[in-house]
Image (cartoon, rainbow, N blue to C red; front, side, top):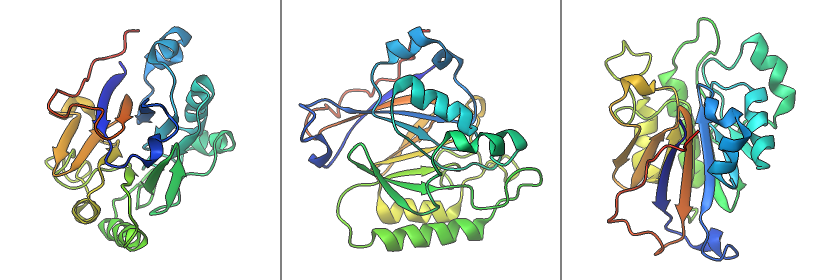
Length: 239
């Protein structure tokens, strides 16, 4: 099931040559959305401007979506992205966003926060590593105007995570600090199982956080073109 979400952007610059059309992202992580393996379902989704990966999908799967939608790809690395299959598939994709770096795609600034600890068997969380990422990204964005989208594998602590799950699915405190510091309008993450989460998108201040586990189509609309008083659509794409 491919979920849908629409948000309004605060900066009109990315939309100058789009005639009022939204920027459409397909965000994915953790598990393959079987609906997107079918060409008819991909046609029903419609044009996509950018594929966004939030970890734990191998590069062959990401490249399949990029080819299927004829769209560029950006992604971060998850805690399971080190197995032999993942390593063997790396040639299919461009490099992941270097941790705490910023890329510019589809007119948007996109910052990446890959899993900050050891990956693969014996993977461990690194709260210190998450803090280093957060401080580095905050420094890089200091004094820079314009909104940024943050991609991470793990969500911020207390915002889309599962703090009761013995720590493994807890968010990072450093990311929570970063969210308050940067106030990004959109934060995309994976890692949190949908079956255990009460909501797949939440609001924290001015930031919309989206758990993209599986797949979500996100439409980003120009300022003034989206009625924020209306509910944001979250209808699945029919298979």
